[in-house]
Length: 219
Image (cartoon, rainbow, N blue to C red):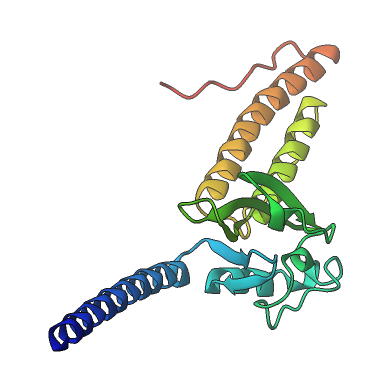
């Protein structure tokens, strides 16, 4: 009987050690995920199975703070100081809980005045299919959308014959700065050519047949 008790104690110890090892492993994995999310440049938040925000990474908090002026009037129930704990619906323009119940990857664009975001949501489940919640990514498209509108306006004006408008360079960097320079350079070249044509035609209309086009740049 003493031998049975001893074996039972050893089994209990082995089971306890295995459980503790599993808990330590899971805790280490969770810690690595948390560190990765905390240091990610992409704005992300996680909601639990009940649709309440359980976590928002620093990039998400910074994004909401940056655009709070545009967001606050359109999200009247949102708490921008304490993001975690509130319903995910408070950060959605329609205020519904459909996003928290999504069963697949959903992508859509959210517009709050001049602040525009590409939102991607995906459900989070265990290996056996138990729903844990949803992870949501916000990507700031505000500058991109503003540049698209500005470029479209300048190009539309050029198509109507107005080659005087240009894309502003202030506040633009990287691709957007190169895009502005490229479009403006193209318009400058075309405006110069058309200006030459207009001057020559105007001179011809007045009987000045000696007016010529300026020589082109040597290749």
